[in-house]
Image (cartoon, rainbow, N blue to C red; front, side):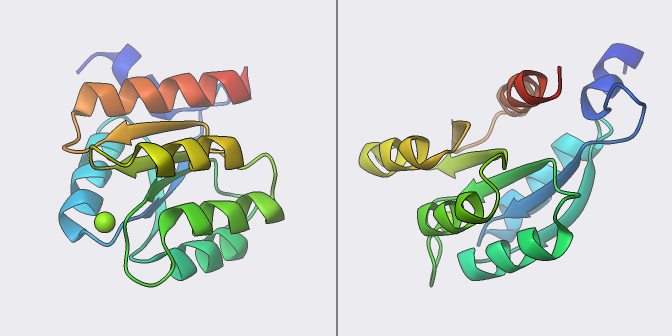
Length: 140
Ligand SMILES: [Mg+2]
């Protein structure tokens, strides 16, 4: 692994970007953790449904640099959780995760303040490219 790829998870000051993962699939949470930690990101915490995601965002604020938010979860869905997070912190950086075919929900999420979306199944280079784009827009 080159130094350049490792630095994708690092802020200009050399500290890691801190990420909150919200997904009801433990498989996806583990996959994202592996992809992001290999690049130097720090996984602050994970949540398995929307309400827990909102609670953790509030609890860790202002430490959370990025949230990955699954759309389809039992209880509070990801778009509703996104809207609650944006109500609390309009500068929150949230990337939605979705299966194909959720176009209306993706549109609602982007209009509500999501920065980008990723389609499952996840590809590690697409994940890192998307995350890097969002963070570069916000931190440079
Ligand atoms: Mg799900």
